[in-house]
Length: 198
Image (cartoon, rainbow, N blue to C red):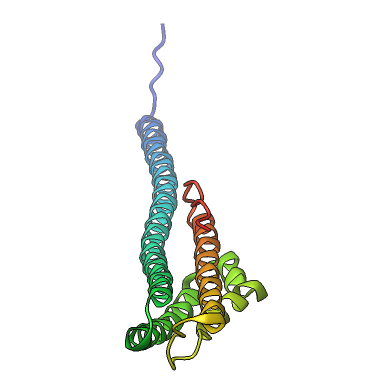
């Protein structure tokens, strides 16, 4: 039998070739693994970014809702105060009437500032309500109470003035209830409407 001698250079070349193929395979496997890892990280990063964006949007909406609730609540308190002042005006005369009249004017000045602030932060629906003709008529009527010269003591003049004040009180109540309904719709507050207190 004859033995075949393999040249050394061939053995070295084959060994180096196999080593290079093995090393190349290992390097390729590392590159593919790194690519897949980077792709997974990008997907996770995008998912985290979307999640953070949703969280921030929700947090911003929640804070904005809290601001609106405070402003709307303050506005409703002032509307109730106007109703109370008008009620007190009906029960008084002379100097007390003039004092309540003055208080009503001050309240209405403050009320105007609140209307402007609310129009800045409210939704389109509430803004449309506040700018509607019916709404404006109710508010304008509140700016024009009977004159401050005093509430008539008796007779037809007192009856007419009392009727005017009752109409003002009704306008204030209707405006408050309408505003409350629009604000609840905007804030998605599911509460029963207030009963009409005629």
